Image (cartoon, rainbow over all chains, first blue to last red; front, top):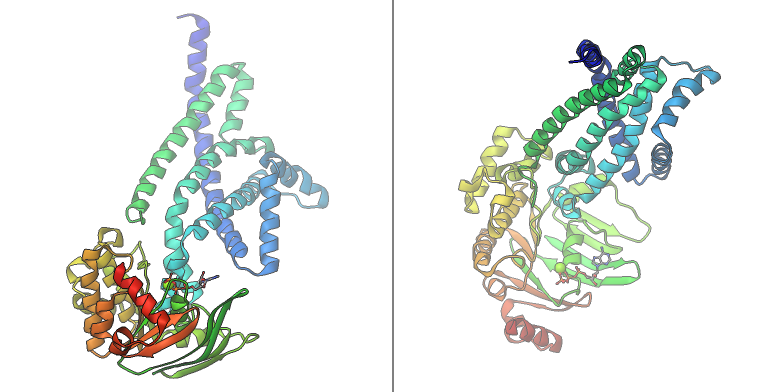
Length: 225
Length: 248
Ligand SMILES: Nc1ncnc2c1ncn2[C@@H]1O[C@H](COP(=O)(O)OP(=O)(O)OP(=O)(O)O)[C@@H](O)[C@H]1O
Ligand SMILES: [Mg+2]
């Protein structure tokens, strides 16, 4: 084996753990936190859209329009680099969490709204006919079924999120990708380093895809066919 | 028990119920027949306020409601009135994520706030009554249409309604499954449940009905005993309609 190959292998072995660690310390927590917050925000937004209360519907629509219609990267830059000029300075990680959450919330609200709307009128009426209120019907009858419907698309947006968190590097969060970038520029081996980074993302998303399929299986057992 | 007067319902410009007057006594079974689109389902849905009438009055059990165009009922009024009724749908509409037993327990727990134990015992009793105790742990998709519909009946009965409303409960069923459902309904009728049934099952109407209503184009054309309506009708429209059903 020549020296160049040996050097690359050494670099890859030595960089593997630091990059993986950045993934475990930042990428995964950032993904999980923003997924949960994005789900809550998405659900609230979906409720607002379906509430029939004009101002709420308007606010929800406006929010979704803005955050689905502009690039996530631009949203992150506005929060992290832009807001300080009006006196609102946030640290990198909170900026990333806010940016990703707002973006996820917009997409999730559309997934959840579609899922809730997909549950037939008959289910609402059956719930009303045994005396349930709207809130009870939503909680006990509609949401559990809508959850099942929305799990595949939510799973997909979860997997996309893992990869999208690499954008946090651009606002100086020292997550997986940024760690790879640092090592790549220090060692002058961008090709191999970025392949290594790609492999580590692949490991994460493969594990998460597997988990997603398990969850889907659990939830789909009794869906009306 | 049920008193309907001058009831009107329209959807947009389409007037579907054009002044219905009707009495139903406690413990009696009323069968409603009529052509497609005549307003049968709408009338039934007005009785549990799934549709809010535009005009008229309905008194049912302890409650009397009057309707007029500008008036909006409070949710509590609707809910108190509705609790006196049980509804069985043409398409069953069981809760697919719950077992047969859970379907029958659901209202008892959520609406009547009973304990799980109490709700379960009662649900099992009622499932036994409709012949499905052994299918209690099955999910709806594991049951035949006829079994699903009997769970639908059990779910409504569990709420101890004063009146049971049935909207073509057997018309989505394969012919061989119709009998089991009608048997359950007939038993209920004989036990003295007050029932309003939209159906084209003439056998059931003859055997179980105390009163038959023929409705066409949003008005009641004729009412009487099954014999009066089926054998001795003097109304052309009724005659034509009955002939059509018998051919089918
Ligand atoms: N929600 C609604 N909006 C608009 N029109 C409606 C609505 N519900 C019913 N209609 C119309 O009202 C008329 C009566 O409908 P209804 O369902 O009461 O008839 P029906 O007697 O039950 O007929 P079928 O035997 O076919 O079930 C029909 O013309 C129908 O299209
Ligand atoms: Mg109908």
